[in-house]
Length: 358
Image (tube, rainbow, N blue to C red; front, top):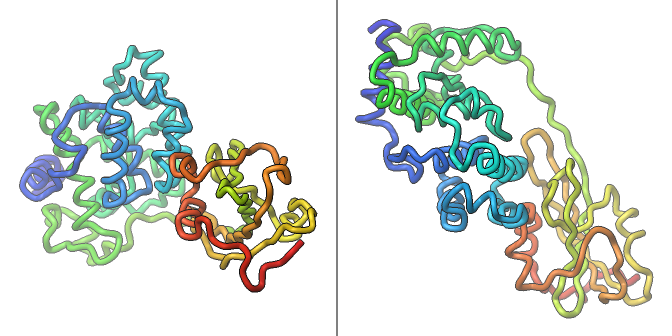
């Protein structure tokens, strides 16, 4: 096998051994492909399956999604993370309706002009739906191609990224693009998700082993090369869980930009002193510290300290926010840790030993 045969090999392997039963496959519907591609960014297939199904039930087409309130979209996205994807999803649907008559553009170049659609996502939609001869370079595909090609240039440098894009384009199928481009594109993604894993790749089972430079060198885990790594940071936040005797809780929409932008959340504070200062000093408020925990974001660890407080409706005038009934909060767009807290401790008795009376 030589490099020019890679496309044919990948197409055949995908048809025989690749993933062909995912809920967003066996379709050329750009709405479904677009939705799956956005959801799969930074998120595993096993997690996306259920969200994808629920989204289609609530928003079966781009017109329905565009017409829905953003709060409804964020509520259904709650727990999937990276909430800017949901906001861009809604904006993109609106622009597809307003600028493109409800039809997704058929070229990757035009798709890239829409919110939340980068070069690789645009290429995936164009290739999978319309058979456009265009490359993709998501994380899985980047790993496969750098290993096959022995591409050891540092991908933290923009010029090297562009060079890899150019090489990826040279490997694309040249015939019967309507049929081969979807198979080839899906095949590269499948290889990266299965055999060509980041650690301990199954080189002996890979259909490209005969031409793979990294496999021949016995050093597949060297690739891809990226020396510049984003530094992780940490932040401590105190969450004020105010609840009244009717079981209502106080939630406000987070500002954009910022952590959990656009989602409904407890009031957040940078210190316990700041939280205490916000609690009305009415002589009968009681606070109860729940166990702190860490919520991991992509590049930041949030050290969260939830504090429950029982108040009366007249005690609270924080802005923005309002009292939310017990049967209403499950339908709101909530950050995953807030939803878990509410599900685990809902209507917990605040009058417990050790509660602090203020």
